[in-house]
Length: 109
Image (cartoon, rainbow, N blue to C red):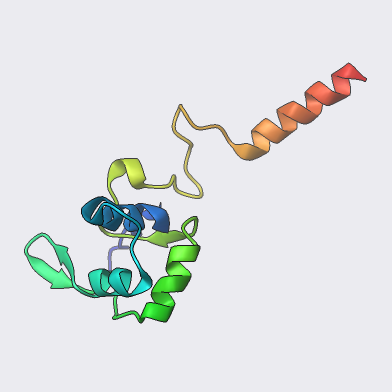
């Protein structure tokens, strides 16, 4: 059986931003839950999170925008690099930046 490719990862904030663009303002948890539960994907309606979410769950999602989630609908500019993949040319590893900065501090002493 061939292995399926994993879904791309994206920050949940990109998903929320799509609704913000449609509304022109920040959504309430109730609005976000309704939008996510009746998401239009091309010509079909689906639950964005694989199942219906409550307003309480939507409030938690709205507070955690930096969380990475799997998303079939992730656009290339919204996609996070694979954990084992290389970073794009315009992105630098945080660990590498910290190491470089620590090296500069040692040189000044």
